[in-house]
Length: 172
Image (cartoon, rainbow, N blue to C red):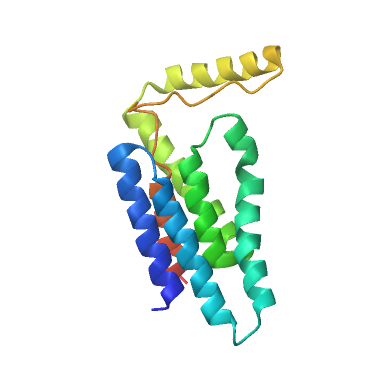
């Protein structure tokens, strides 16, 4: 098992713990993750060349920020989820983090459908969604979509992120 694989799994498991317990991932956890990622890149890539390490480190971070910025503006995803994916992107690089993002969205969709039909009133949620779209169209802005707090329709997106990391490493 490589260091980056072990780091990604342990880091994401910690993020899931913090997210489920306090509904936020502490910045200290994110900063520690970025520092470990940078140290791993610098120590591992000195032999092969610093250029590829810098591209993989920053490329993964900027790809995540670019993909999630619109969702952040609409308050559809929490900043903790974006920061966790950015740290993972710094370790994995652009190609592998793109796989994780797509897989996390698919796993999150499955989790959301399960919650929608078994824990929530799905008609009320669809009505809320269409009212949100109407309000966004009328106001010509992106009002906050997510209702904060422990609500049955809110998911901890760090769980699908962990699933995507496990699929990446354990599934091939």
